[in-house]
Image 1 (cartoon, rainbow, N blue to C red):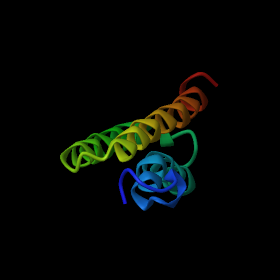
Image 2: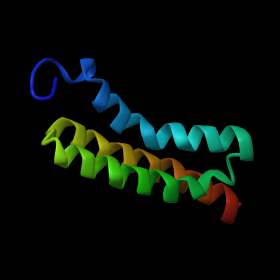
Image 3: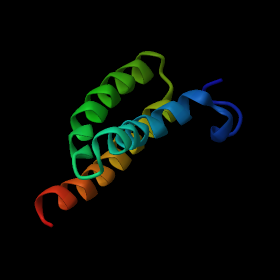
Length: 87
């Protein structure tokens, strides 16, 4: 489905967008929001491999969504780091 149709109907785009945020949410629920900053390592590594898969399949939307997913994860992890180390 890569390249045709709207992006919101592509499940790979949703996987790329939501992988980092979902990892952060699970960590925030189970270990606490102030400890969920470590999700950046997990989300970054998983995002990197998803990005390689997207490049292998030449799916540009999936690749861009994965980069945005890692950026979302970095933002959420930064909030957790502020909670853990600054407050």
